[in-house]
Image (cartoon, rainbow, N blue to C red):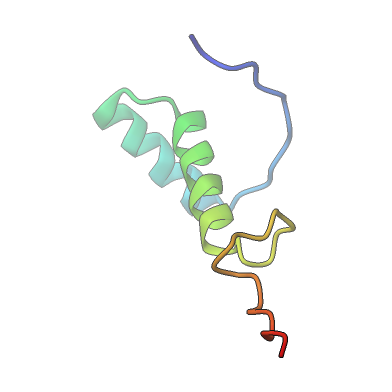
Length: 66
């Protein structure tokens, strides 16, 4: 089952549009799928900048009490 998607507008270069549509013509995968995959790649690349819950390995070590 597919998740609900929201509509948005993005502006791309004509060359990007041409290559995306050529890719679609050869693979029959919708252009929107490739755009969402690209967004996922960017989000993964910059996830260190996004807010989130700190993991145990990210937490600073506490000084031991004497």
